[in-house]
Length: 479
Image (cartoon, rainbow, N blue to C red; front, side):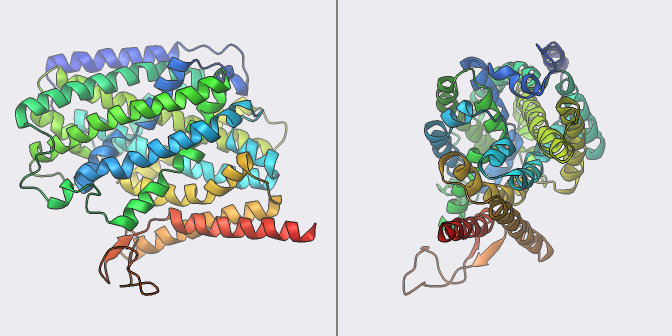
């Protein structure tokens, strides 16, 4: 439990009032799905950037968990891939997403392939966008402050942190993100300054696991490749897509993504450095690695600064929670229910979907208590299944609807089955043993028998891509 001084409680109270005030003060110009889900496609550059950056760092406690596993390598594994694919998105996709009439990925899949592909894609997006990791992190912060059980903390934090979403939709999310964006940078910058004054350079890792000082965190080249490919999440992330579709102009979307990449680099530097300091400050290391940043605040930060650091994390987690609840709720309500039952009110269906998404998030959060596991295994399987079809929908020559739907379903099933197998056989990192050589060459730079995690994304992507390619070739053969 993190104990707060009176000054810290003042900071927390002011933050809560501002957060809820900004969220509930959002007013929709009209009662329509376009206004609720895309803010009327009117986001200017400052709101686009603050919203995208704050949402993207909703996994902030997962960064602390990752630093405890990979140390310096966290920057390479969970930073660099997203810079690369963020730039890819800005250059090759952002303009097409904004210029298209469709405002969601399932809309685009239907336009490119057909209704069945849209339904399968919507179901997969529900599974990926359900904000389980964010519900877990917000509940963990609430538990650290109140001392309540994790179950009570997750339920209450998720409910209170998302109420304003039902009223204001994306506009409420965007207004809250301005506060979250500001506090996350200020909180971590001040925490880093205090930590450096106490412990010196964050790169001084003497006495800790030597792997933590390695560029790859000791993960090995295959794991680095897997994490890098996982960065392609950017290309199919529904929250990312929603903001690109909601930009005031295609130019705002492209510039906004590029500016956001620069902001990610700065914040990665801040958060990884604070995490490295926390490895020395938090002794012994907690069993629940998600608690690393809150326990650093407890051990190192003075009154006032501690509160500022905690609300900086809480703000970005809350922003991401409501953002992904919005897109997963839209996928469930507007993209699935309204396609199965034409004529159903899209706005009502979306709000119903949001409620269902939040319930699912709480259930998942209480059963998979590792943020990294949620990213690496669960989300990897869904990203792998969506990646190639979404790219083709915007940049390629579409295949038949049936082929596309089957390829996505088969790819996701493969990835999730691989995750289930790993869990059932006490292999949560989904490791395999490498052969000494392949065709006489040591391609991986590691000795025979080395355990290397390959994750779920690669198997899911391979199955989807092969089936979709076969389907395209089959269609060409018939013409």
